[in-house]
Amino acid sequence: MKIEIPYNMKFFINNELNEIPEDLEEMKKGVSWLKDKSEEVDQNDLAKKANLLSQLAGYARIVGDYSLSEESFNMAIKILDDLGNPELVFFNKLRMAVLYQNMKNLTKSNEIYSKAIKFIRGSNSKKVKNYLDFALHNYGKQLFEQKRYQEAMELFVEAHEVKIGKGDINSIKATELAMNLTKEILENEEEETESE
Image (cartoon, rainbow, N blue to C red; front, side, top):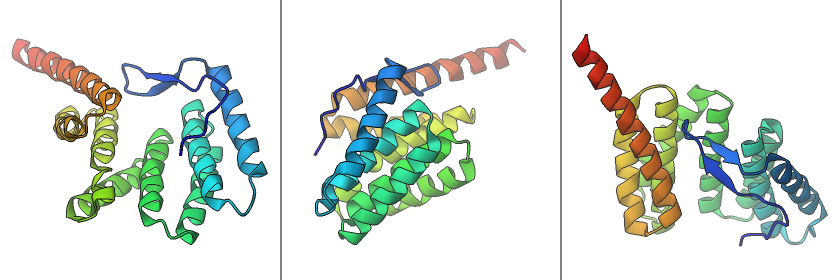
């Protein structure tokens, strides 16, 4: 259940594969709006509160408010755990890996991605398997940032195959952009090696 936010919360992916707000000030207002809404929500509607906190965490990360993002993720995870929703707990923990990646805590994010991908591949749950492309794409992005381009490309290719199976056009485009940027870097590296 996506909450309609009365601000421009759109973002684009830059050449470093980072999410950049179309309008930073608008997104910051949206983050403030989500924070207020999450505090106002009826304590009897914990599912809605968790949803608001989860969205708040994601957008706070994009605008660079990492402490608010981490705090919101932790609160959402606690509520979802109390509500007995292990799939959404898992997904929010996976999204925290992206936060740790942005915070340059690569040890923590590497650990989350590695465990998550292994867990997803071994799971029989369709809901859990649904997160494989997200985990592969974002782990690939982290490897890209570490200049481990060949490993990143392998994850992007696998994520792309999964996304095509799901048919999510916007998500497919993001991974194709990542694949194209990585391919270009790998080709340039190959040319430099050959010219030496």
